[in-house]
Image (cartoon, rainbow, N blue to C red; front, side, top):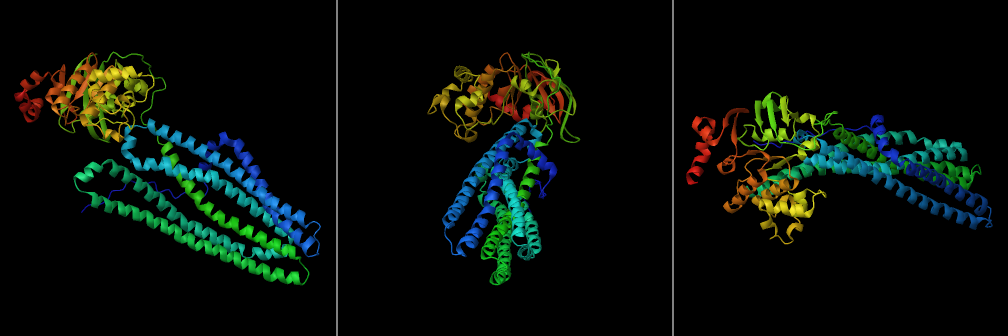
Amino acid sequence: MTMDIEWDEDEVIGKVYDSRIARRLGGYLRPYVGPIIVAVLLLMAVAAAEIAGPLILKEAIDGQIVKGRTDKLGTLVLLYVGVLAAIFVLRYAQAVLMAYVGQSVMMDMRVQLFSHLQRMSISFFDRNPVGRLVTRLTNDIATLEMVISQGVVAIVTNVMMLGAIVVVLLVLDWKLALLMYVLLPPLIQSVRYFAWTQRDGYREQRAWLARINAYLNENITGMAVIQLFNRERENLRRFDGRNRGLLNANLKVLAWYAVFEPTVVIFGAATTALILWYGGGRVISDTMTLGTLVAFIQYMQRFYWPIRDLSDRYTTLQSAMASSERIFGVLDEAEEIIDSPDAVHIATVRGKIEFRDVWFAYDEDNWVLKDVSFVLKPGEKVAIVGATGAGKSTMMSLLNRFYDVQRGQILVDDIPITALPQRELRRHVGLVLQDPFIFTDSVEENIRMRDPSIPLEQVKAAGRLVGADSFIMRLPDGYTTVLAERGANLSTGQKQLLALARVSAFNPEIVLVMDEATASIDPETEAFLQNSIRTVTANRTSIIIAHRLNTIRFVNRIIVLSGGRIVETGSHEELLAKHGTYFRLYELQYKDQDLVA
């Protein structure tokens, strides 16, 4: 029986208002306080204009129409139209201002979050699927933008409008106003109830969306494997399950909203009926003017619209608080790999490497490396071999300081790498993976990693040096050819040649070749690679992790790992003579190749 494994999603319910989160969000708004003040002033003008409209209408009815006069009617009509036009212009200006603020805050926050992600250690990405992080950078931040540009402004506008209408109605006719407010308490309770019931649906929406993003990223990236093993139908079934989960969450929200809208309409209709019944009777008995009754009805419509809108903003604000909490949760994740405050800056590196009593575990007490110690002299070439899981690749990750060791030290030129700035350390280390990452960009930019300080001639020289120039010049546009995502239009060998050219262009003092960089390629390309590796590692301290005899024959010595420990060290001939672990590996993997050679 198989089961779907979901990454633990942040099930943040989200308060409607959280002062701690609000203060942090306020920090992002502070640079735009000028436009925000102008927008608030515009809102106050909008509220005043909204209040003035019915009063103008009341004066037109009571002062002109009822009395059979028209001397000021035209002026009042023009004034009423002018107020409506002013409302349109003021709302437009306010919307543009707040849209600018919202988009700017979204840009600032997204840059900060992306910058923070780039500083996180590799272990952070081991714990967090790509889809979830993409959701944080896109959907969650977009939710905040919507709240800043629309939600907060609408809430302030609606509250101001409600307060002003309450005062005006009491001034116009306090008895009729009190009658209108009779239905207000049950309406408020209904609004609160619907808002609370909707929050679960909004929470489910966000959770299912993050799951879909994570699942899509994994499946689209691994599409070749899915098709190879004919798993399209099963993966579609699993995707359909997630998709239906999002559908059900959406339908739940829509179902409650579909009930809420008619509820507000019913309360509005009931209030209108009460006003017409009581106010109409008073108009007939001459205790209230017709203009006052018409103004009351207009204000009543303006009164219920903000209440209905506030409910929408209630859920939006709640969603924004939940999104903010998740975003700040990522931002608050500690950077596990940090530079020392008194870091040692080095301009050049000789290339001496030392592992001193190194212990490392990805999980607590599950040691991958155990008491590993060795020294590489500047310019020395060393191969590390061992069975799968012996800890070879882990050593290279530690040397690049993708992780920090739990015990012991790793030193470069007798300086602990924890005392070196990460950027400086990695600038002096070149890494060649079995499956190099290729960006969707030109060949030129992939070699120099979009570093404008590396001129094109240096890029081409690196390509010629490693033998990549021969296939690059056969591409449609040579070095300006744009490569497909992850280098899909290149062979494995071509991607490895680009990785070697990348190392050559940056000219590091230390070179790491990991995980059988010459595996799964044709003999002609392998010959290029072997020559390229020798060229790139010449006069550089080099560590090569490989199982292929052709890759490690030219090294100065070989280190054999088994179970996370160094069990043997020596040259190829010395290790074979010992008849130990290396000899057994050789018998299993290299003997036939050696005989052929």
